[in-house]
Image 1 (cartoon, rainbow, N blue to C red):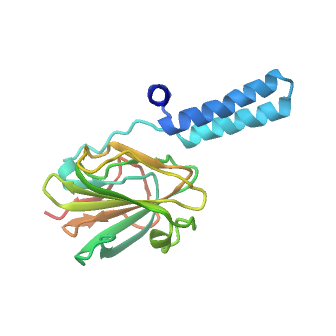
Image 2 (image 1 turned 135 degrees about the horizontal axis):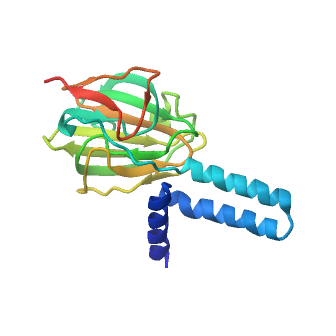
Length: 228
């Protein structure tokens, strides 16, 4: 029955442009609002319906069209939001010490929450780490907050990583990937409920083309390009 409910949510969500994880939640709250109105509890019904509509908006999942450029030569943003930091550092949980570009994108509660693959390739590993729920724009959130590390190898064997970081409001990270899955650049890979942050770790042979304060869109905005 759970499988059927999940399939139903995906079909309905795909039709109306809402992530499957939000369909059942929004539907339940909207149904409670309608029931309250039917019972004569007008204010409670109106509040519940408004909350249901807000939840549906939080989980909106619009179609995206990546820039018309070779996907093997660019890195796309994996999240909607504002670039909050650009730095140089090693891959998370790696002992190799190689320096990568880290581009952090802060997702506010008003942004689309669906995350997308920054490049195409094979998923090497997916690791979830429990943690706290500090404000995601704080730099230490990448080490202390609940997070999900996705490492992937692109079509030329370069290693990339993406970290989904839960924030103060976010209490659940959804990742639809498993090791050895293959993904296309810009493909939906999961979401972080009610905001937070995504860190992109980009190999050094790319040049970062965004700066702090720029707004980006998952699956569309180019954040880095190959140097050669």
